[in-house]
Length: 70
Image: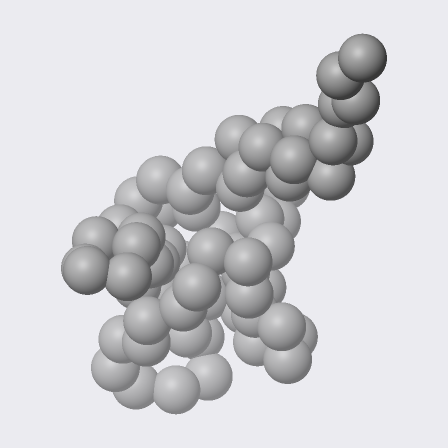
């Protein structure tokens, strides 16, 4: 008999909910507000570049450290 690993199912569905696009308003894990300026990929994986409202410059974030603002 085969068992289903529920963790992998929930993580994959959670991953599809974390899609960002340029122009999305986001909040960081430490509650800073900003705007997504681009999505890039490196050898580790995908990351999001955001421009924060309170600081000059652009900052790279792991998608799990950002949350979309509706």
